[in-house]
Length: 516
View 1 (cartoon, rainbow, N blue to C red):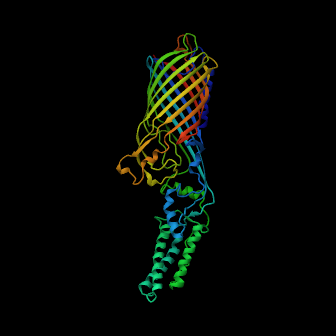
View 2: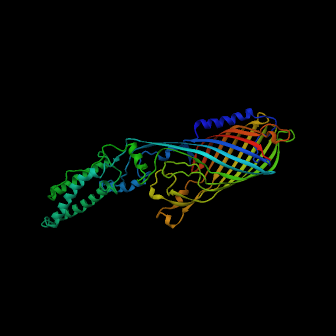
View 3: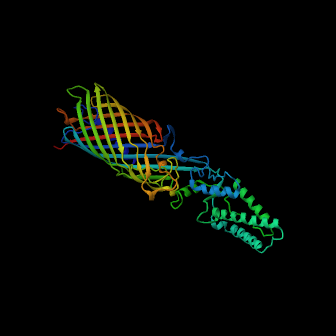
């Protein structure tokens, strides 16, 4: 859905109150529909956010992958190479640093929900709704030139070094076997120690630099601390071979990058679909249906705007089932969002309208039971933006249930037109996650990490306008029954895990037609 379509939807909802007849009064839209009447619903929302609340603190969405030093903390697949480089350089706490990363992210979701509601008996309404959704996530990362590592030039570039070092070690081994150092025990001991250390160094460096199956994608730059330390160690080995053991040394050195990694280097590494991560940054857009819902509404009492008086009392209850007809977020996109949640929800809601004269309030309470479902996910903490694909498996997730409370006060500017505000509180319980079965389990990895920070709560404020005219549905009324509304909503506080700081524009238009 494009920008023009969104604007048109909002415009329709704003204009509807001005063109619809005002012969009857019913300020707030009823939950149910009179018997023999069908209601056509078009509800539109536009959500946008570039910040989120984490543990109650508001921070940029891109901070999830921003860091002063990109290394194995955010890219666990580099941890093995940290250990190798530390061993060959003698730097015990060595960490690859690809540079500082400034991340930026922006999300927006546009949804048009089309629905039908039919009054089947007095006070009983059945309904169904299907959203058509456009979900977009834009992410960018900018890598600074302050790292200590750059891209590995590749196995071919390292081959001359390994040929010379391997040749020198082979010569040393042959001379030991031939007894060249037997006359001097100290020389013999030095030769054997040098061969052992040199062979281990060769193996470590070949694993790190030269083996296409294991080589690190990033290695220390020549001018970095690790690059200088490696060069110094190789100089020492060469001197020992030439000066103390009479073995021709090796002039070649490993090919180390001159410059640290760039943004393109890092993006290519983490986004490589055949690499260890396969999570692509960039712009992702999904146009698909959302999660459909169907249910039943029961009007328990309706004494609203009766006998020529404004206000009164009205109460209704609603139950629905939300189906997983949307598309879940992808595992191969950074901070991906989908058009649906992936599970079945069973929801109940109660609504009470109270009012007198120009002032009134709608009170709402709801409870949503989110049923368990199977999903392919990376078993990693929620704050890990680049989990290795070795952690992908199928888990059984039981999402926490959601409780909502809302108060929506309004003030009538006319019998059918009012300003309305609201305060809503959402509370979500903690998820429960387990492996689907023994064959899906990853040894040593607790699936419970996926449930971390899933218990959340948030408060949303909104302001807008609402119009409701029952027209010919009320005795003595004429004209097309219609209700419409427009609101702006904003998350003002949150606690617990990750809660998007959403700005939402909501527009609604509903038309009523008698069919019997």
